[in-house]
Length: 190
Image 1 (tube, one colour):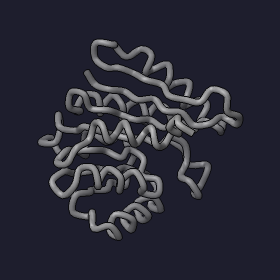
Image 2 (cartoon, rainbow, N blue to C red):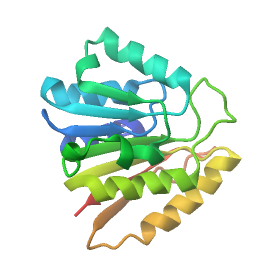
Image 3 (spheres, rainbow, N blue to C red):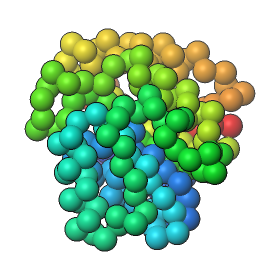
């Protein structure tokens, strides 16, 4: 297939935005794959902040980044992404070049613990306030469950209302696939 799948497309967007020495955010750690990916992009001169409410996600991510020797450039917070503003040091405000969210539930985890629109939208607003110009927020929206549909609808309503003078918003999805395939919403700060 010549078209990028959703996850490769998400990574391509982050590769365009995040360079060695930059600051990045993994707003939903999951199993740590995106945290490690971001750590490789920022290198030993940059920094990654990661957020998750589940201890299982924190432990999995710690293990993954330790195996690749990236512990010095990553700080993990055992709290929700709605605490981005109060958790990321002020001296890194204005320097964040990329952020990623994988919305829904922890793969292989408790499916009753899900991301919710109120905290996700709050985190996006906070990131837009403290990101660098041309910084990119990538949202991978998994909406194949009831709570995911609610979050999808609230999120799409929110991003459609963002002022185009402040942000560009892109939606990337395959529209002929069955079973509610995930899609991407990318927001570039202007």
